[in-house]
Image 1 (cartoon, one colour):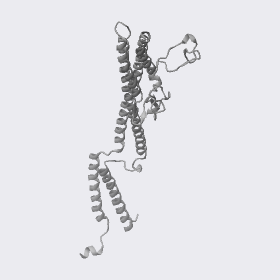
Image 2: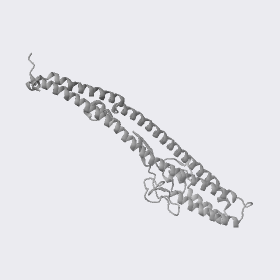
Image 3: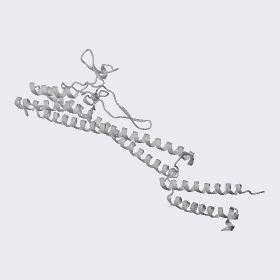
Length: 316
């Protein structure tokens, strides 16, 4: 087989080109600290990296949703705590004025003013909000859910937010479930209160927070001891309902925190996997770069011997 000068030149050019290409790739890895700089470097790895990044973006959005939900639920829990204290104080007033032996018309007239203040305070707490959104109005978050007379103007909507893949959480509790012991009751045409779909045997009384505060205030003003005594049990019912609602909120917050912790662990696992696929081993890169530089210098030195001498080399 005859080896021509062109063959020698092509061999030398090809070997030097490959060596420089490998050096360039190693230098790029050294500068970027990544061994996967373009999809052609590792198509399968690049596909996995894109999948992991998409998962990370989704998890970041879930965590933002969780922070919003936690803000709503935490502020709602504070509002329910304030309502609990209002109910406890109202019960203390009713208990102290429930008998003629421990109270008089003058004392009842005096504490009736405090009952009015408790009512106004309850309305203020019911209209709590985060930013421009009211917490206890259901879907109606742009207007106060309770007016000055204690009438509920919201609805029973629950705003759901996705806190993990396929996991949804309600970030609010409608006010009608907070201010009533049995919110799904309605008055019949005979003035009695029945649960929807039940007969007279299923009669259940609904106690409304604002109505009860007003009724107790009127009982104090009129000296109606029977009405004041009856309010004690109703305040207990309201207290129990709000405590149960606070327990529900606490369960949601705990579930929210557990989900956040699971997402953080998932992100850490994904970050470790992404680093294993994408990040370069700098010790290996530096070592390979030194070796390739030696190969490149060797290729340049050997090329001098491969090219045949010319007449001019002998005339020097």
